[in-house]
Image (cartoon, rainbow, N blue to C red; front, side, top):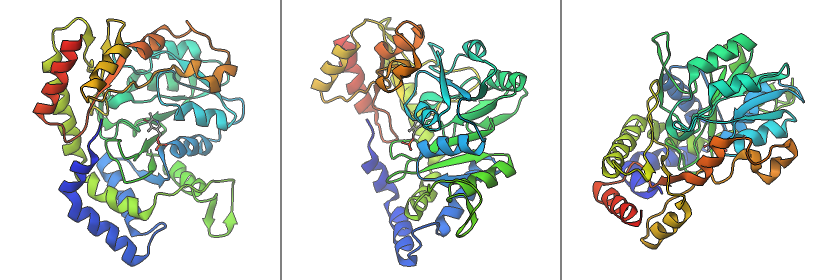
Length: 369
Ligand SMILES: *Cc1c(COP(=O)(O)O)cnc(C)c1O
């Protein structure tokens, strides 16, 4: 699905030098590269504060801790996403309220958000899925009307541009109250292990987040609140500093690969190629088709026989995950998510794809269909 080795080989010297420098400085925890990377990422995103942490799941947890959400508060999020989002909601004893998605963009359907709001609702977590921003204009409007926080999960959308109705362009993850992201190796900006970050334009919140990720402490061994230990390793920060300089070109490479898939796969009713939203750029964290023949799993199997990997993100709606059955959702509650879970198929997508590989993939996919 990805080719991280070929990508590494092109930046090997710089990356290796950063790793070596960290080791020689023995600056493993909160070393100079961590601070530099935080400010470089803040510059790139044009956001006031970036606070790194250990992974994208922690980033979501810390965001909810920083907003002082209390047990029983309701948090609205997408039913069609990775488990991390609802996992931390549940972990903090908050109540996840799932909402169905748009069948074309796979992102939260704003109309359904409004229907899910109750007096206990405190926050909305849009997940910018597969590389496209959710409909932030509508989400901000709803959040303002009902006085809700917005935590943007930008783990799959680092570098995505969103055009606000007011005419301003902002990076996904910097529009709501807090944004979160992940540097998991296969993400668009990935390190060589785990990593994550939070973004905010609210300086006070930024300060609070910094305290929470550091054991609730501003001054060593003095603890003002209950925090956690969640840090980005200096070695990972050194790698990310190098890769951040290439993020725009990485995202561009994914986009041109997506355009080429689109061209190769155009004109077949059996498959729906990714639909581009009107207000968001697409950085193609995933290139996800909808297979309309009802034979997605068979097609995936036959692709595998030709050594073509294809993945299902995601096979089960969060509403039907065994871990959350106690929430009382049942089959039929989320028709769009349930259909997508049966139809979606993601093709290999990364920065090193070449035309010949894509032609091989498309040719076999079309033959199978
Ligand atoms: C990857 C991902 C996360 C979690 O990131 P980790 O760094 O693996 O904890 C959260 N949300 C979404 C949408 C993701 O894709």
